[in-house]
Length: 450
Image 1 (cartoon, rainbow, N blue to C red):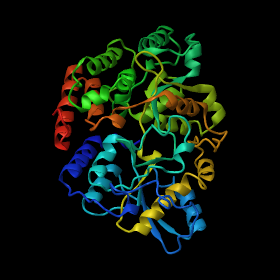
Image 2: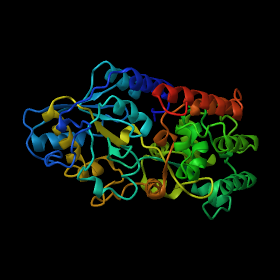
Image 3: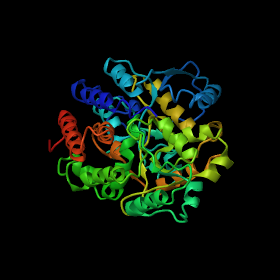
Image 4: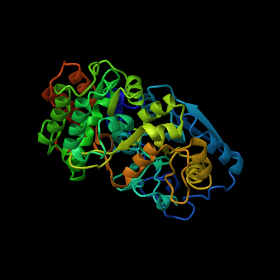
């Protein structure tokens, strides 16, 4: 998972792009300008109508460049169009932002469909509008609201289930500790960790496992505690300066996270351990629970040779929040595709047609090819998908967006928390540094209240 390792650079580049680049408005109604009628006949071309001679470009990251290949092949065969899939080197988001600001843009691109990551392109009027897409009504419950929409306008198509921040747990450890029920709320989660610790199970080194050596996962334990507050408008208040990271709600979540270390519930090498160590610890039963997202489960699945039966027997998932079991949703760049305006009406329409094809005629084959959970009501998920991922996807129905989804800027929370785990920042240092950077980024965007 790469999107968080370069968050500072991406946030700064996005802000600079949004503030300094000349707006590139386009009055052509087929190109998605402000005056475009996305419900007009022809705005969404039929999925397989002929496009002989049309060439499109599609940008992907190194960890997602194989994802669209079966869809591209099917679309080219059905329409006669050609799509050049181009891999942009890591850090993907930063390099894409840089290319866009210098005038280089693809017709299509994988992109994290969150408010903060879409904002710069929207401010520059770079993206085609995807409202009234024929496939949106076919989305399974929760997917339409999980990402891609900013201020009521859709700019991205989600083709796979976004990750959910929650708890992956080792079922064998739970059984040995006598745990028969899934914890509800943060306090029960902590009590479950304490119960695992007090059970003194052979081979279990710690009830929880953190990977601050890789940094990016440190934010999840804080983020999941904010689910109820997020539903009650926390990020709207932070986005307008009415509430701060240093105030009670966010500070309390950081304090709670720190207390887990103080109580000895995490691994002794939490400050240096990597994400690969975390995956191995859960799979091997050295820990009972990790707060993580789907990409880490994929690492666990690789250790299990993607054996569904073995994974289902050993690894489970449940969402967790302050008061209950609300999942916190964080879509990634390998969940969604956007379309950039090119100024060529035919190419722009062809790009929309490709998205339409992907989410209709080509979707069933795509789901089978990728062995993923379907986001469309009329397409079944493969029987080979592990139960933990099915449970994660189920929690999207009642989930809420993360900071990455709902905040107007993403400060370096994960780095600040990694510093705290390593003893170089206090909980109050974490929130102050996070608030200071957020305010700087928000002010650069011209947000009111800063």
